[in-house]
Structures are given as structure tokens and as C-alpha cells.
Length: 316
Image (cartoon, rainbow, N blue to C red; front, side):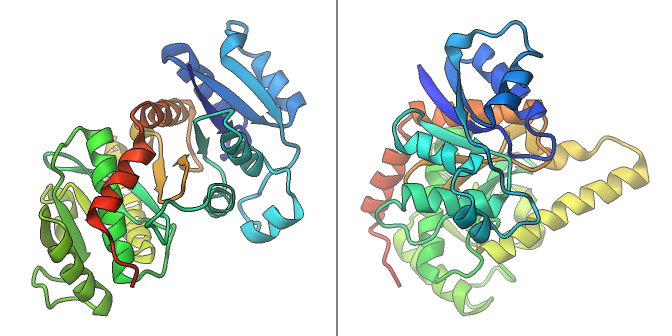
């Protein structure tokens, strides 16, 4: 049975929603969950779920947390027993196959990088968000893990994104696009122009630049950009849907419903990490934990490493 380490204290409504979702995943899928947090609080939450197969639940004590308004670097240095750090260490020791957290994204990225290290051939991590399109779904990365990027980083993101799309969306030959301000290869800044050259030379499935207005039209299955651009694009989309929903009084939130996929995988680190939205409810947590189990069962990291080696991404 595959075990998933869950940062039970990560999220706006932790540990209640996190524990609820994790237990639902353990009940509905062939997996076990390692709940990480203050033991007394976790036991109290488990007491609210009388029908629990304790053979599928383990508790690991972690007395500290990282608040959303804290500096992640300062918090991780001053509080070595935070729930996210201990959860990552649980995976590193082999007691779980993957990690989920809906807590402080910066702390999750830093803890994962510190504990797992990076995959060979990857310089920067990337968060991959699943977005809706007119003909299904696509993956946008990076959406916030690496704000400053070089062209080779975007090539690495593309290679990792293709593996993610194959596993998560069952698209065997994903089309890769580069987010830019125009379709022509000469459009954009120095980063996008050089990245376009690298992608053209390295990936037969690269279709060229994708303008922002076409992101949701399904032209590409994987869309790569630096984390600064990707985070702005994602947040604008979320905000637009909320405004339109309020104006029309209709349920349009399904367009950017993060609970469906559960979370965004942190690609590039040498461990399976799913990062959830801070507002994740039990359904989102359940889906994220199941996603983590799926990645572990399908040798996700080994597949990424194999594709990176085949592509021989340059470090420049």
C-alpha cells in the first residue's frame, strides 16, 4: 500500500478540512495517510471520524507551523519541527511515497528543495497548474515557484510538463507552447526569444508561441513561462471568474475550480510534492492525495528523469 504524507496543519481551515479529505482518500483509494502535526490536535480530529480504519492512518508529531504571513526561510530556520518540514522528512526516510500540503507555498517549495534536492538535469522547480480549455484541459507552468528564469529552465519545465500531462491528462503526445506576447518567434523579450529557439531545437512537439488570449483555447497541452508571468496569469484568471460570478450571480467558479485536480505538482524536486490552494476544502485535499498516490504508482519521478536525459537539456 502506498502511503502519502499530509501536512495536516497546512491550509486556511486546517486541520479539520485536511484531515477530513485525507481520511476520505484513504477510505476510497488503495492508500494510507501519514498525518503530520501536533499529535493532540490530530487525535482530536480523528475523534470526529468514528469510522476510521486506523491501519490506513499514521500520526507523526510536528509541534510547529508556518503562518501565511511569516517569512518561510526565517520560519524554517527558527522552527525545525514545522509540519511541512517534518512531512518532507517523512518522505525522505521512505515512510511515505509523496507529500501534500495546502500551507504556505513558499515554505513548501523551500522545505521540499532542502530535503529532497533537485532531479538531475533540473536547475529550478516549477509549479504546474491544470487549467480548463475549450476542448478539455491543459497545464500551465511555472505559476510561482521560480520567479526568475533562464531559457534552459523553460525547456526543463516543458519536458517535465509533458510527463505530467501524460500521467494526469492521459495525453500521450502533448503539444508544447511558450507563453509570449505574439505568435512570431521574434516577439517577446530575450528570455522568450531564446527559449523559443531552444524549444524548437529540442522538442518536436513544440508548436510555437501562445498568446495570453489563446491560453484557454486548447492550442497547447503544456504552456511554459517563468513563475512571475505564470502566477500573474493564473491570479488574473481566478479574479476574473470571481468578478463575473458576482455580477451574474451564477456558478462560474468551475472554470478555475482548484478542488477538481486537488493541487499543483511541484516539478523538479527529487520527490513527489502536491501543493494545494490555501482555501482547499476536504474535496480538494482528497483529490490531491489521490493524485499523489497515482504519481507514486506510475513512477512519475523516474519518467521525468528519463525524459530529461533523453532531451539532454542544456544548463545556460
